[in-house]
Image (tube, rainbow, N blue to C red; front, top):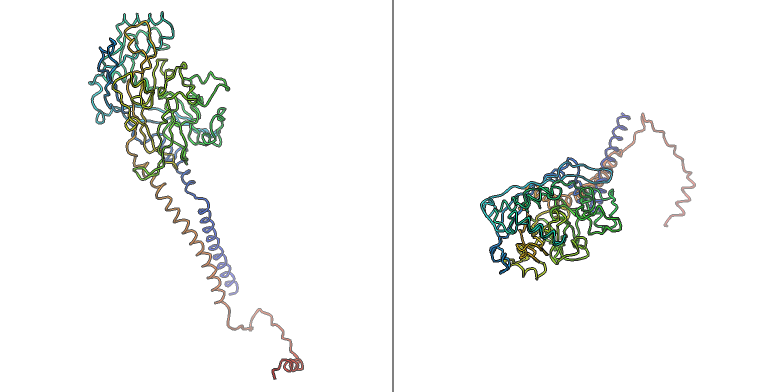
Length: 534
């Protein structure tokens, strides 16, 4: 019987101690949740770019519908322009819409330096239901880039070279303005001069058809990219050119085709002393993924190989988007293509102009330039050289929205215009009317539609459900832990009081009797007399 009582007593004590321990753990967890919000930890766990994760699958094959809307410029006064009696007059035609499908392939996680290497690949599919017409049947009068572009390019080679090209083009009956279908102009057409150049200069002109859109978009394929997955591990020889914030940005580009700068702009031939921040693609983002915990008023750079350089996105405001998520809105900086210190290395042949960016190094040296559509934010004098351009910040400005905590792109509308930069030509009267012009060719809007359901669901759980659940959990843990501790203490006290016996029997007991000492009567009498109140 005694052994049974001891066993019950031990089990009772261990049970109470366990409950108290659980209660203390719950209280401590709650206190930690009050001091350190676990939301960001869970964000990092869920939005972790690691092999096999949900986030990795979304990044490898983004579920976004990305559309490329192409607006052509049709020359309506060909004869008058070429004979020099009128300025070029253009009319915008479009959009012709293509869906872009991106996949990030052959991904390798580099544990040593905390980077991820992959091969981005893009394909394009025509969307007739979103387009204004059939690109195979719609025709435009447009500038023949192989002739006018090569004639402008060879100007620096002198009069003899220019005259030789002019003679060849006349012999081959190559004309400065051609009537082409939209599809031909965008994706490739034959020109006798181009065929000649491809035959005799195959190492330079490695194509025998020319499509301006195809040439532009082809630059986005065949590249290897490396982004930083763990900024604490990654260190580059050019990191001192970046700010501390830029260095610590997760998912920023570390290298493009194995270099932190672009080969097209001669980065591989620069000494360390010659490299400036302008030369770097390092620190920019490819647009599919941005860092978590963005701060307001931070400028981030967007890089796409077709643009031939990173372009800055400036913070505009912190707001709530149409899907109910908090978002940071960004726009292209007004001076993104201006002659500034940040753009100094892109000043081709030290011959730059406000609002225009040469991308000739990326396109065989042919003087192609970028601007904002309709010469928005460009030199006003250039707007006077062509009729039919009407820049509007509402129609032609670019913007994008990013979830600041998750770094997920929510929407985007990036707009750029492609021009032919004809500064000077000589030896060919047929192309002389183009001298001094930035000839508008087409402009492009890269845009997204509504967010995919999976992205909406993920962001809703992280942004709306998770904060409420964590708030409820930390109070429940606190109250539950206190209840367990106080309940265990009360139960123990109650049980102790109930088990005190009313009388103690010494029969057949293991207890030893306590001897009682007798008090003498004389001592008792003295005490009574001393403390008597009488």
